[in-house]
Image (cartoon, rainbow, N blue to C red; front, side):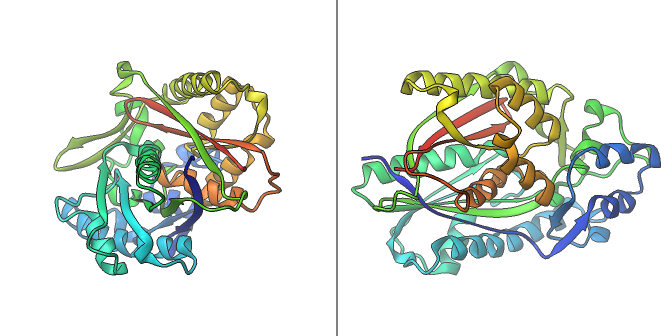
Length: 347
């Protein structure tokens, strides 16, 4: 018997800004507005007022992360549980790439705030970027399948504005293919929670199988590097093309093993990494524009929220006109570079 996704929830911080507001606050030359304008993002959420983001040093960034990440994660969890008893959960996994909890971990603070029982198993994934929701979900699913029906909670929280790295001058730094400029045009904040377990409701999708594919030749194309005592985003201009190839390899390998074709998959939840990434993945997999609609809408309304974006789109999938027997694939992308695919069925 395969475990199921029983529920999803997400939460965003209170500070909300349109792209024009963000661009003007960052004080970039007008020539670069097209990068923000062409992102197909209408709105992003930040955990700090935008005027405060640029003046925060790494110490302040991380102090705020540890406070806000726990609170925002608890909000997402409460939405996800929807009245279920927190004491029935015996596994808690947490993932992020935008904040540090040297120990105790983020999951320990979350468990304390929610009153979880002392025999909850904890694991924390740090540094797998936008992709960390994928291994987190697999850890939870493997635990549920091996533990006689116990429930597991998956939590990811990304506060991307707390990794803001100041441009050396008012003109965008050309290093890493203008990585800072493109990161500042893309990322937003959110927390997501996913409950994994068993029940008899066919509307709660069964996790059938997963696949991952990493090409280590692209280690330096995506992620963060440590510079001048703080994190600095790296996003090479090759990422949209590389991501499409990695995702294609993961998806085709998974479908071949299950003896399915891409045409058998009705629903696609693709990491809302950016317009060009979605374009390249759609073309690579031969998908229609309608099949990436949920991901486009997540990108438009929230920006790229890193490892939480698939959870946001997944939550919205549950409100679609799903039929019993439908297959869905969740697609993740992250540093490594890595592509991941999770096959679901509503059964």
